[in-house]
Image (cartoon, rainbow over all chains, first blue to last red; front, side):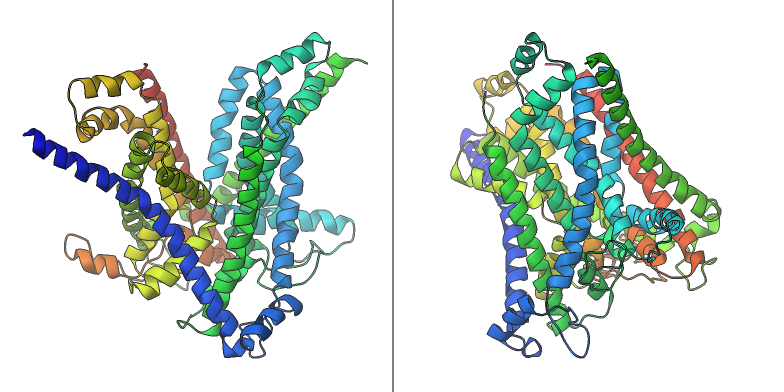
Length: 305
Length: 290
């Protein structure tokens, strides 16, 4: 091949690589365009009451019924359900995540770590609908049985059981991020602590964890963002009823659950129902983006030793 | 204070937590296996279409469509993801565009999957008029897999020592010769691992496909691609995970058995794909030791 041809080929090749790399930007642009455009349409739709009214109703009403004849579009029940379940999930995931990460990175032998890691990875790959099945038909009956012993009745659909399952589901993800953060702490800090006579346990909790603080918080922010965006577990096991409650034993609906419920039905293009899932989706996107950016910011602030 | 005792107690707690998680995973598998036992070993389950009678319902259309959709998803994610990864790792440098794309991909990987479904519904289904088809489903899952593929491509390229690149350039190789003759062959194992991991995640994805209108009752197969490729792409679809979701959300208990069987098959598929990727990674580590 002549050198000129080769040079041209090289330019074409590099151009092709750049082109595919920019495809990811197009995806982001596509997401933002699709969400923003239909969200604007939602808020200007006559059935929601037109622009300023619909936005006020969105934040002041306490019921969410865009699919009913009498349409109420208060977002709070969905937000409440979303954060209730995410909160339960994090209540499981935060303590267990720290314990597992500390144990695996500071205490466990190399062999144990190598044996456990693949299974934790696999836990992350289990299809979420399978977790949903387990929450509905495994965890809920168990909890009902336990609560019945104390004379408390629990609905078949509730926030507690998907919350618990979600907490275990995001555990490998958060635990491995926490572990990474703790690995980033330089060895000489540990050694300094040991040389002062501190035990392993004390070093882990009073030197390593404080030093890895921002990384650990970032890990949990990413975990929360996952819990908020998770769909199938809550769609299967949390119920389909937007409920403004903080009682984990009652059925609730999350933003993602609502999108699934509406998408399952017949959806005429640009109808009010169709637009409402984009408005809900936009809110979800903004929420998760907020948590992600906060995590990125915190990570960038990790102290360098 | 007896610090040795404290340490032993903590170790016990740590082991307990790890076991708790592993037992959780194990009990999911056992629960699915017990509930779906009869259907898993029923050959008719694999060769019948969905039905309103739970005993006659099967997953034929689900697993055939799953194969088509996953092939599409792998195609899109590989075609877009590997060159993008090569660009970012090898040629992007510290330029503004490369940094922007990088930040963008990090963000995309954290976007909830159902948002991809809304993207596909708003853009592919209605604005591009692809319809609720196998093409749309493949494209959507492909985009969902994209960040994983880009990241693993970059990681496996990073492991190739600088000397290889300098040696190739010194002998007068062009950029594309460097990539095709050296970088790609050496990193192929790592990239393949990434593709398999991404596939195993995408195969269980349900939410984005539900929003673009996956059907749960399909009593026909798409025309085989060797007869009419376009018709195949345009035909409506279902997937294993979606079939399972449909069955689990029905009130009749008999359908739950089908759901359990479908879930168990999904679980086995994922375990299989994950083990393959582990094996590959292990092999690759042995083959190339720089």
